[in-house]
Image (cartoon, rainbow, N blue to C red; front, side, top):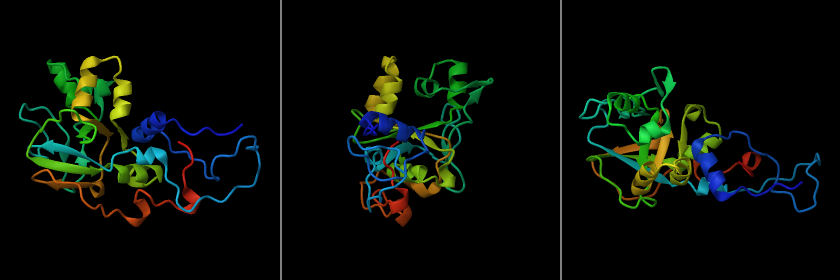
Amino acid sequence: MTSQAPDENDANTQALAGLSHDFEHGGPHAAAGQSQQSTATPAAPAHTTNPAIMNIPRRVTRNDDNFSAQRNDRGVKKSHRDGNGNLMPAGNGSYNGQPVTRLDHEVVQKTREGRAKKGNSPFTSFTNPKAATHPQNYGGEQATLKARKLANAKLKGKPDVEDTSFKGTKGLLKEFAGNRQASSYVKKDGEFHTEGTVPSRFLSYSDRPKSSGYDSDSVSEAETDYDDSDHFSNL
């Protein structure tokens, strides 16, 4: 049985959600009719481009009036920058013993319970400028996340992102397909969600929006750099 190339949307959704850590380490997909049970492992191409990685935006941004503040102007806990520059979510994802869902994070009910759930959300919302239809400016400070670098680190099993996951605009729209309000928010801002703490090495902060420029990624995690022995043929 031959391996099928991953569907673009499914591969992107899996990569963005950080759901898959197991990859095939053999050669490229087997030719039609070739047995997959052979013990011989073909040599991997020198530089393999993973389609799922390339579907992830290089950068996404988040605006805030004060990244260091742990609460917004209404007193609700929010994602914030810690003393080391890591971006921390508002909470640990639990309220009254129940998990805070992505929908709880996206569509905040105007009740005490709704605000409390938002204040315990494990998610942080970013904007993908290329996917947004009418992005809203949420403050004068901006955090830029190197999303593709984070995805590559996740795929390589880097320990500092073991508990960090993420989902992009297409994946969010698929998840919110039955909710028009949530879907409209995602489309408007071109949303990209992270879950858990985002390490500081993937972030930069500024007082005003910055234009895209050269990204000096580390050698081991540049978007197009894959070891011969660690290329990814499937998600």
